[in-house]
Image (cartoon, rainbow, N blue to C red; front, side, top):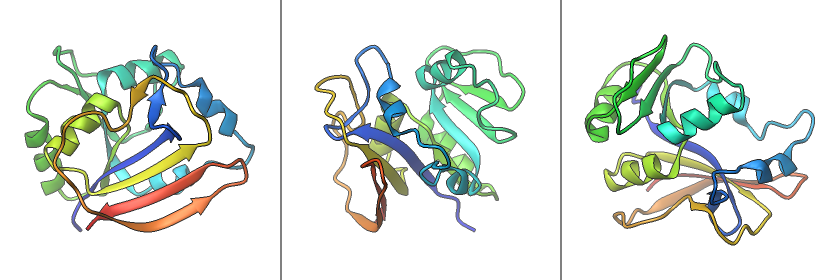
Length: 175
């Protein structure tokens, strides 16, 4: 099985994953009992998580220390830190890390953000699939999902799903 690096992320209609101060409370408007927007099924297909240090710190600040369960977690950080349990802090070349992870046997690799990490992955042409949930809100400013200069990528839409609260989820694969 070829491992893929996949994004599963939400953004506002105008392309922001957070407000300028990192606030993601706008996502709470989509909360609906019994609806996880496909997250449970998605997370079962991954055994490794890759995310930026700011996103990791945000998850910890929300009291979700074991958010990813027993999965291997790689936190991309400019400052080396001591590893803890299944969490590895990585400050090297992200392309080398992802190439090594993809070469190992296992399930897919989930990139849970943030914007800087996603930008690095796009620049290195490492993203294989994207599931993007579009929240029906215009934030006007904040942290953009796609921000910067990266190579052109042709994608194929494989699924588009509309949910009761107005969220639209798009699933793309590399073309």
